[in-house]
Length: 77
Image (tube, rainbow, N blue to C red; front, side):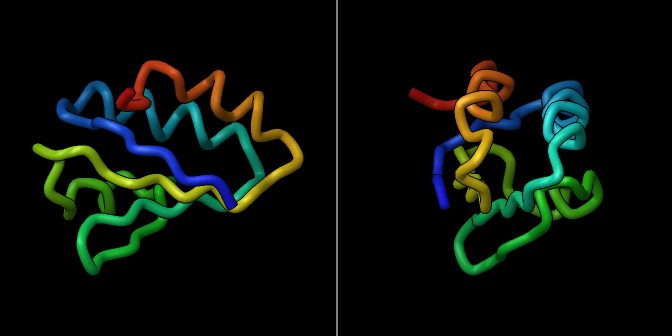
């Protein structure tokens, strides 16, 4: 499992993020405080506090480099 901090502070970013990860078969979880939701669920994402960075847990190791390259615009450095 790999974890990164991401920022989804606009509706357009949320849509682009979900479209980016939908292409992968891996499971993705977003963690905000005590809440854990499926990162492929737009409705679930909007239930989180998007004003702060959120932890993304990527449940795959096989194509992690490709996933991280696709998620680059969302990753908080």
